[in-house]
Amino acid sequence: MRFVVTTSYNPNRELVEKAKKLAKEYGVKYVNRNHLTKYIKRSLIDFYYVIDKKGMLSIKWEDGEFFFHQGIAKIRMENIKHGQKDYLIEAISPKESDIVYDATCGLASEALLIANYAKKVVATEGSKHIYRVVKWGLLYYISGENWVNNAKKKIELVNENYKSYIRRVEDNAFDIVYCDPMFENPIYESNSLNPLRSFAIYESLNTEDLEEMLRISRKKVVIKTLKKDSLYDKIKEYFDKEYLVRKNGVVYGVINKLEV
Image (cartoon, rainbow, N blue to C red; front, top):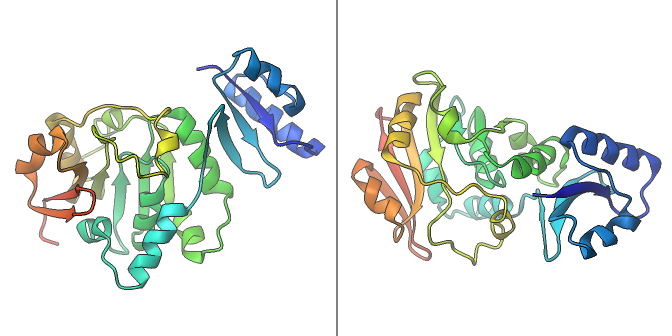
């Protein structure tokens, strides 16, 4: 993928220097925003990173944009506060002393929710582009929600494919392991996920991965899948309990190692 780094329009000197530093770190060219159009018209780049005047980092392309936001996490937390069940939290049941591993971080929406209840969340993201934007957001995004600001401090994000990460971690390294692999049959109504699809890594979870996750977890493993995906049929026999979201067919399958 071909890309450059730029700023929002009419940047000050500090913003330009920050963008140039980031371009050097990424090993690509810094382009003045006023000159970016020629790169796009000549199809010299596939997308570009932008640092805006608020100091936030995003990725833009011809008909889309990817940026860190609290969106769905905020909505789900509001629902929880109003007494609604959240099946992710029900399935994981994180305690204040728990260290949770989120194998597939994505936008970190679910990591934020989990971190609100847990001691710490270690999350992996295999895509370097998704990792860069989300890592930046976890560091610099300031929310109007105190719980978000507190939760993001408890997330340690690692740029590594979960398949390699879980094979180098010691036994019982985490209390709980959570994995949300990309669905075979995407729910395109999930607007928050749509911008990720171009950058996401599509690798199927297999039973060997599942065994590794069980090895590195102390209490349980939770897998998110779709009832209609083939993955569900492959691993459903492992599940001790299932939480089904009836409106979209999402299943949170729980594999217990300890009675909790």
